Length: 59
Ligand SMILES: [Zn+2]
Image (cartoon, rainbow, N blue to C red):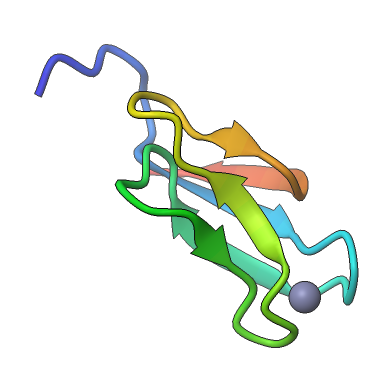
């Protein structure tokens, strides 16, 4: 656990359906929208690649 960033969870807005969802910032797998299934974060091994719109950082 060498993550020096603050906040492990972020709220993102789905680019396709505008659903807002709190997700893990560094996911082991791709994170998909609960509503439409669109990819919100691509797993990159470290920090995920954000696909949706960041709404806020949640601690
Ligand atoms: Zn969606």
